[in-house]
Amino acid sequence: MKNQLGTHHPAPEKAVESEIPLERRVLKGAFEAILLHAEKINEGANGVIAHVDLSKLPAEIRNYLVGKIEIPNENAIKILKFYSEGAGKREYEAQLVAYEALKNETQAAQAPCPYLYRDISVDSEELREKLSEKMGVSCPKVEIIIMEYIQGVDLATHFFREIVRRDHRFSDKKSQAATLTFQELEQLVPGRLGFDQPGQKGKSLAEKAVEKERVFNNNAELLYSELRKCGFTLESGLIKKLESGLNILHANGIYHRDLHLRNVMIDERGEVYIIDFGTAHISEKDSGEPYPDFSDKSYLEDESLIDLLKSFEAVGLENLPENLTRNIDVSELDDQIQLQISQLKKVLSSANVPITAVKINSFLNNMTAVMGKRVDSKSKACILWAISQWKDLGGEKAVRDYLEEYYPNISDIQETLSEQIYKILSPSG
Ligand SMILES: Nc1ncnc2c1ncn2[C@@H]1O[C@H](COP(=O)(O)OP(=O)(O)OP(=O)(O)O)[C@@H](O)[C@H]1O
Ligand SMILES: [Mg+2]
Image (cartoon, rainbow, N blue to C red; front, side):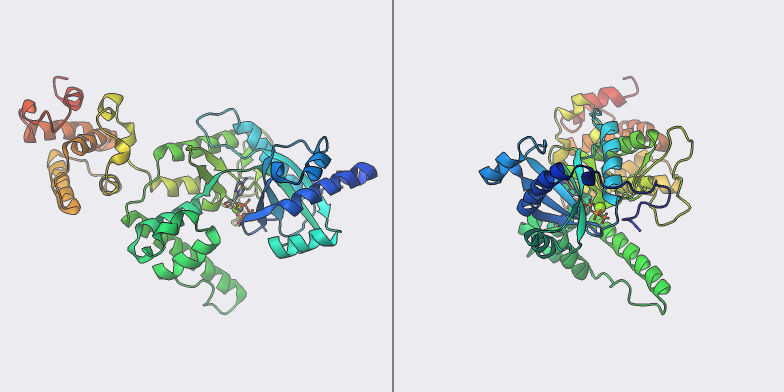
């Protein structure tokens, strides 16, 4: 399904290359040269992703490419695994529209710049061998998309690596976590977490498929809950960027429809990328009809991933005012504390129960028990600030009450809570 963009698209155009025989031959050689030097780095259900650095090609090939293909040196190449004429072109075009919509936004996710697509018939023995042996693609024709290489990880890989880093059941693999590939992680993690094998039960194929999906979902939930137990959180800036990126795409009539953890990448600079537009739909602007094909349940609703990510969001702490953060490095706050705060908030929100001074006090005492040591004064100020931001739960009043009740004489606790938090939260402040 994913590789076919659905019935709403026009019939695929004839490949442009057939129109200019001589140029076609020259270009074909250039693309072959690139593919022969590309190295497989990743794989999804529909495509193989390879990396190529044109500056590392032999000089004769570099010279040969000059003037024929104008792209940066470092590239990712997506080779579609199953040939379905025109699918690569549509994916390229959807990605280009998305890239254009997002490229000038500094606070939103980006799409990798797609440079070009090509429909290539695999004629030479050398190329045929390379594709089938090194990439696992054996078709007489392939479509490729050459695009910006993203130096980062997709979120599924990130989630798996974090469980390996944090969970004691992987202590022998912990030091290798950063280099394990998605395929290796997929082999390693489910077994050790005790996941069920999907697709075992059910009589008919349809029943098996339903069972498979159920097991997949249960396994995913199990992974998420193990991650939460280990104190794994996501920076809220990352989620905000993804959310703004999606809003911008939707405002431009672009619906991704296959937005899962594997289709979002993050890099070390905190950039977020939406990738894989193979199932995207572009609707007429202002048609007022989002998800035109949404009756087809096999598409994912874009927002559902945001909901999942928000359940891992580090709550409140990143919103500390500058005068408070000057003394507190929020990133150094214990993960366990962050987790406990976010859980407290979740429990109160779902029960729709306000926070009170007494609850804050028992929370802080309980934290001492959880941590096995007293919560230090800077962390305490930080926790109080975070709670004071819970507007819907009456956080500010509760923190004021707490300070009044438990610290009647603020000068006694100057080293416990910074003067700033007193100023902000004291009744006279
Ligand atoms: N431009 C890129 N730069 C670096 N890595 C990439 C790039 N594009 C994709 N990847 C990696 O390759 C993986 C597979 O790519 P992609 O999602 O495009 O393939 P797919 O087969 O269409 O996926 P799906 O299984 O979602 O259908 C991604 O999850 C990501 O880890
Ligand atoms: Mg994908």
